[in-house]
Image (cartoon, rainbow, N blue to C red):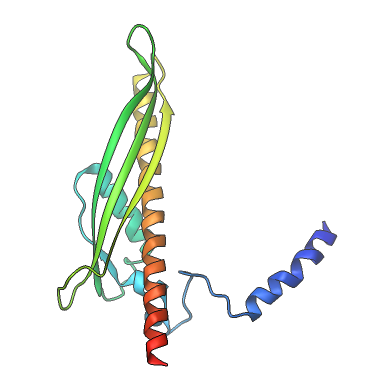
Length: 178
């Protein structure tokens, strides 16, 4: 165990020395606005229709950190579609397994002045759950848990895409400025 730690220590030390920074990690105090994390926090998530949309919005607000009180500079508009399929159907037409898939399409636009979208994207997530033959409430809870997992995955994917967009935009702005 000690030997493994000694082998991992040099590469980990060099990562810090090369200027590596997490894409959307926490920013130092006072520098929040100049990082991808600050840009994410300055993104307001518009209301999304339906229960799945509410869950997705809640996960996005948490992932982006837009509930921390940073002034909003951008608005994120999201449309989500959820589809349920029966995978395993017995001869008596009862289902034993369901698949739930979701697609979220998003558009990011500046708030002031209201303008054209600066980026758009798409996220996809798939999950499945078993359906007990005599347990209606267990199947209902399993379905709700699958939808919650889907929305959390969609939120992670959208957050990653937005963080990459903000980082690319900062890099091009810095390259033009130098």
